[in-house]
Image (cartoon, rainbow over all chains, first blue to last red):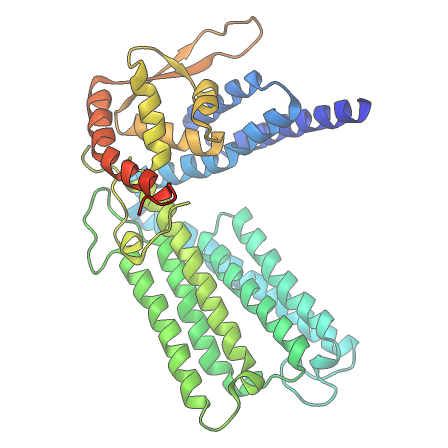
Length: 281
Length: 116
């Protein structure tokens, strides 16, 4: 079949391009295992098989880079802390500097009120515009942060993207959301969830160390459990004088974000615990 | 896929006890002195390359696995990476597989209808 042949060749080209791209993502001194995987890709019978084989290079490169970072002796030095710290702050602040003017620009262009608030003529009249800014901005922020290897900022924007997505869906469903009223509480919860993920990302277990109360996994689990418990308790208090689901939708957005943060932190924890597991045989 | 409990999350499970790692170890143990290719290991164990290579990398890091670049069988092909268990790796693999055998038997029995 000519079409099948064309698609097979396309898959073959994609596989080679992917392997070549992955090669550039690994430092020259750490390429042995990726070279091994690349050499074996020549055994694949057709393009599709080669593409499937090459896709396995993505988790391998992640593993190689994680291992390299774990073994870096200079991680605790001031320079090793300052450079990523500056990159992370720049990635967060820089993207706020894009999103905030974009929000105000859209407000001015559409002749409506500020993006947050439920006043007539406010942003609820243009939910898609403001939703796109909020979600697209956060996703782009995450991609930019990954590009400059600012992992803290990447997780920050990932949680924000999830928050904004769930928030926008609820916003479209229910119309009016009283964000300013509950904003401070929700922001505090969101920050706690974000901190949980970020802690999971930056703290490292020493190889073979027994799990203690102050271990990364424990701190992350406790922090996220605390956030979710706080959100639950807050919901119960508010149930006394108003309908929970109808009038408190943003609360669930935060809860959803905290859950998302917990899953993300769990995935990071699982992956890194496998890498750092170098205990006795 | 095995579920992760809170206990496993807080206290990561012991290294080299996942079913995938055990299947690689079992295969390497079948002929511990022979060199094995990654592609063949993947074909026999059914593991995808993205699962197999991180396992091999970790085993090599722990000193369980010996690696070597072999000359290609066909001209124009790149050299191939080959693997075999070290002495310590073979001993440790036998221990791990023996420890895991009762657990695997229990899982297999649980999967048989009417076994409980």
